Image (cartoon, rainbow, N blue to C red; front, top):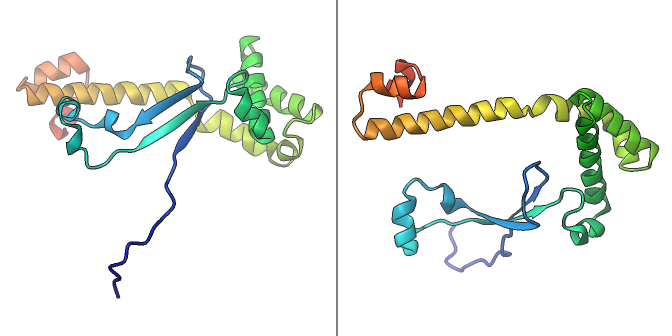
Length: 176
């Protein structure tokens, strides 16, 4: 049975904790509408946006947003741990050695000690195997090529020309 009475819900809030390597401000904002395809049309008529999501982004890299990190010991220690891995990488150690040494350093210095003692191998696996920057960038480049191909098709360029521009196979271009 349906009820016509409006049920109030808590106001949702969305946030992202950024710990990437690019220079990022202490606090930023992401909007779903920035990813919309018809952005020119959207910017001229904001009232036509039927869905918007605004996400607050906080830089939690070591040395950033110290007030937030001081309020959450686990997040502060995680930030330190990731920074330690980066320090070892800058010292020209391999990624696997950098992670291994950072785990050992943190355990020895009571930073995420219990968690790393219990889950150290899983953490190493996750950090080393799950994310590969080069693979990520290859996917991004492939997506960019496909977008160029879509735009070129929309402009009426022949498949052979698009193939020369993007390097995509003619089958891939035709499937777009």
